[in-house]
Image 1 (cartoon, one colour):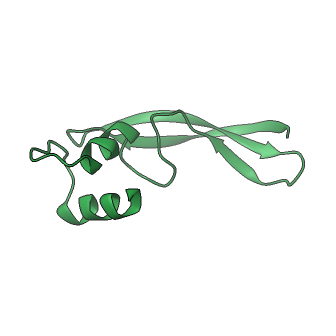
Image 2 (image 1 turned 120 degrees about the vertical axis):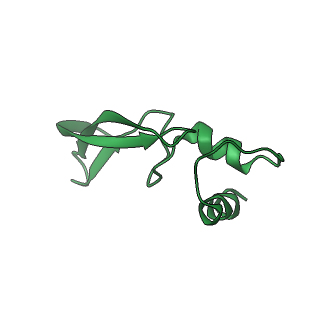
Length: 82
C-alpha cells in the first residue's frame, strides 16, 4: 500500500500524573482505498487519551496505582485489555 501525506493534526496525550502533552500526528491518505489514516507512534493507543505505558501499568495486577484516572476508566481498561 502506498500513502500520500495530506497534512497533520494535533493530538493530546495524558501521562501518569494527568498532565497533557501535545503531539503533531501526520495524516495520510491511502492511494488504493482513499481512506485517511493517522501515523501514531508506539507510545499512543488509538482512540485512547492516555499513553500506552500508563494503560499497561494500570492493567498489571498491583496493589499500588499511581495513575490519575477514575476507577471506572481503570475498570474499562482492564476489561478491554483482557
